[in-house]
Length: 305
Image (cartoon, rainbow, N blue to C red; front, side, top):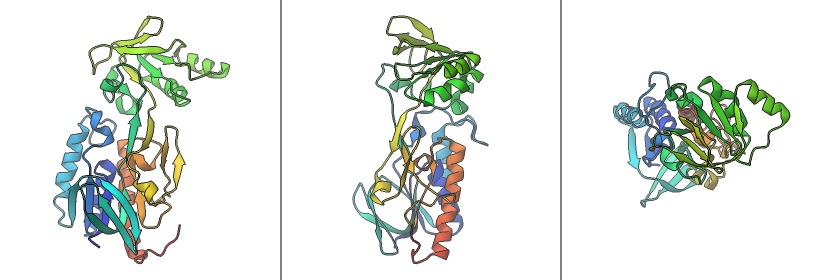
């Protein structure tokens, strides 16, 4: 085997996993496409010790820290395929060639699918957002909107008044019960049934939304729940069990971040229904520790799912 562990994904979860393994003096290779999910965000918020720093700066600092560990290496690129091979795994690289390891940590994240609405894509991660805990404070108490794509909008609508005056746009896809309407209006939420037609303002800033009937409603930020899917099909190739989350499928893991496939661990947005930098990093720590323990306590990879 080329390595003890291959970590597939070089953002917060993957780098946290790699650090645990490198500190155990294990041979680790981090496979990184350089295109993390958070690349559209100007700053990461709510991450203890890193609040307000650009995600790319945090990643760069982590890579510098990891360069101090001689058993760790990086390879830029994606994995095209992965398979179990004896007591380990073989990963074929998109650029060509194979690398092998005794264990895998999957941390390649998810892809977001946004609504086909003029003005959304160019504002994603800046003023079109998915998490008020990550980005709500920076809207400075300005008016915010929730663009419904399903039931998740009701949850967002109930949360957001703590960050600013809130309008829920049902978009013809969210049917509210009388009780739900009462809960929303009790929080001061305005409910707008006419669909949003487009966003306006000089992107990435947002001035507001224009409705199909021509009316304009001011908004400093628009929140929505993107549809998500794994950024790679490697987990499916390996036969990992998936779960259905509120925005899309994610890899099922146990409390130790082990997947249904012995020797395969997963962390970060790929393996959680909740996207959060701190949670991703913590899950990466657990995945790295668990992969290390697997090398010691199940060296022949005999455990069954």
